[in-house]
Image (cartoon, rainbow, N blue to C red; front, side, top):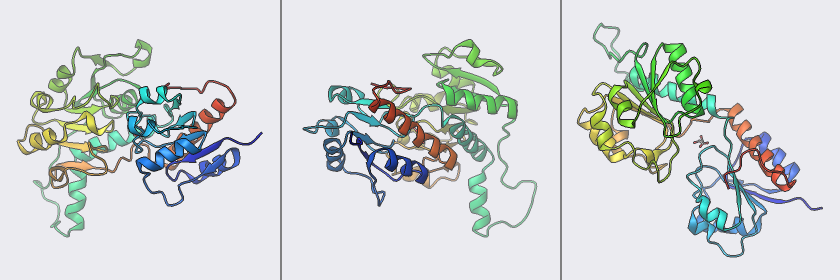
Length: 323
Ligand code: DGY
């Protein structure tokens, strides 16, 4: 029997690409360019499986292509707001993602942003590299203490709980959270986390608000003018979830007005474009969507895609199936 034809939309971890080449009739994206709508449509017409990443917009337009041959979208990432699941279902496609394997990595990055924003790490590094540092002095670049403060989590899924564990055990932080689908009590063991009835309650009480909800229409601009008004003027916003959860223009306005103290952001509303009002500010730490960017994690994510696609073509149900 011939091997299923697979098209990979971007370069992946070399070990995973080698396994994909071995197991399937695989076409790689040799020069790693972002695929256009037409290229994604051609991929759907010419392959049995298309393997997109979280930066490929697989929307109703792409999925409206005629003569689709593909039967599975094996997405490389946990977030799936880049895929129109209804349109995928209507086109007869199964969709899989890669939860679990990037939990710790993303939680580590959320703490990196939280600490960097609070302790002015980005600003300090720029200051030193620019040759502006004139030496230690008691009033120089004072930041905000993290230990013992309150961390507010919007969403309390796996990544949020991994952040809560780091904050509670490493930094003696108090945890408050809101999630319309709260976790089971056993998943909260040892976190000493208090559930809030609304996001607003979290905004009002937290010194750091960290976002861990999915992107998409249900959470679009959840963090906007009202949220910033409710947050403490000394509080920081941390986002490792999805850019469109935050109204970026409202965030810039809130920073300008001093409604919040700063932000640490790994995701943006219009990636890879970042609002000038953020790029020009010293009190925000900006990273280029690095949440899952370690060798170990990127390999594990790729291997989960291989596992999902292999299960599908073996007639088994992939471990996690979105549609
Ligand atoms: C995901 O998997 O959704 C992440 O955003 C990729 O780092």
